[in-house]
Every structure is written in C-alpha cells, then in structure tokens.
Image (cartoon, rainbow, N blue to C red):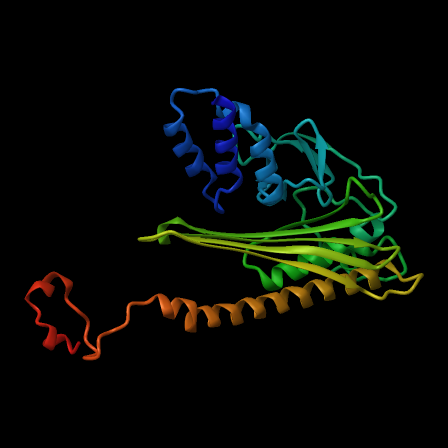
Length: 306
C-alpha cells in the first residue's frame, strides 16, 4: 500500500496545474496524515515536474529568473545559467523558489559564439541594447547570438518570460532553446503556462521541438486545457554560415512556428465555441424563454409550448 500511495501522490504532483503545485501538496498532506514522510519519498516526482515545466527561480541578489530544466542540469541538485555564467543549487523537496550556493560556471562549448556573447557580463549590469554588432567578429556578438535574439523575441511577444540556450547533455553539438511564460491569476480562478523547447543542430541545420500550452480555469467548475505541438523543420542553411546568420534564421523559424500555432489555437477555440460547447448548452424551449426551475411544479405542459 505505501508504494501505491507514493505512485498516486507522484501522479498528483506531476499533473499539478500551472502555479498550483503548493495547493496540490497541501491537499496531499491532508490526505496522507498517517504517512508524514510520504512526500519526502517522492523527490524524483518534484524534480520531474520542475524540469518538465521549466520552473523558474531567482538567483540571490538578482531580480531576474533562471530556468530549471533537464538540459542545464549538472547533477546533485545543481543547475547552471548560460547568461549569468553561474551554477546554483535548487532543493526540489522544499519547493522554495529560490536558488542557493551560487558559484561561477564557465561553459565550455564549441558553439559559445552562437549561444551567447563571448565576453562575460557580470551581474547585475544588463546586456546593452545599443551595442552594435558585426557578424564576423566574436567580440561584438551581443546582438547576434541565439540568447540575445531569444531575448528580443520574448520581449516582443510575451509579457513575462524566462529563457535560456544551452547544449543538450546527450549531444553537445545540439543546442536547446527554452522559453517559458507564466500567468497566474488565482483571484480570477485562472492560471496558465506557455512552454517551448527547441533543439537546433548547427552542423545539419535541423530544427525540432515542442510547444506546450496549459491553462486551468476553476471558478464554479474545473476546466483545463492542455495542448502541445511537435515541430520539425530544416532551416536549409549552407555551410560556413556565421553565428549571426544562424541565430537570425533560428529565431525567424521560432517566430514562424509560434505564430502559426497561435493562429491554429484561435481557430480551434472558434470551432469549440460554435460546435462542441454550443451543443453542451441547454436549449431554450420553443417559447424562447428560460424555464424557472424552482417554479416548474406550477407549470402546465401547454404553457411550456411542448
């Protein structure tokens, strides 16, 4: 039975709606008062949730967020951030949305010039948006890297987003572009999360990924939308392209697929509104007047037009 309980609780944790993990944990504690150590035994479920959902945390002394993901995991509860060139610890068990034990971290990658500016830029000074760029030099990569391009993209299209670019652990020649945007509005009984994870291999110009949207609305009911889209494209880049050209083409494709998916979702919502949802609504009688159900006992069949 304990193992079954652990499996059930792990499923609850991994399926928690956006911004509601703390609520799920609180409910689980009420249901498992006889097993106070049960939550301690499902740390892998917390880690899986945080990494798959691209959870965000703040570095000490910084107002900006960094990502938790399987791509920037170092092991033993540590992760790294490319932009700040820092590594940090994160305790999945306590779920405190704050990093600790921050240390310098220099990423060694053959695609450093493509990912981020080659010159370290210490916190808290921001990256200059007025820095001019030259595609064929490494010292002026600040406006031509994937990280910088992704920053511009997120600012233009999302009110609040956290992003990163890093090599994938299984294949260092493949780069992961990660972006998450959360909107929590518990006072309006609605929370949502947008996630995108793209994999780009410079040598083959292959571009794959997944877009995930998760929205939970729970006022006087419980409605949840979870949808995803697979992406697979060939950028068609020839050999010898500069970092600036590759970064521009990758972000052009990111913008294209995300815009297309948004339009696809809007068409789907329109179909639902005029189709399935409309079919679920209670139809008015032929009199075109609502039935007052508390007075239904006094109605006559003829008065209802039936």
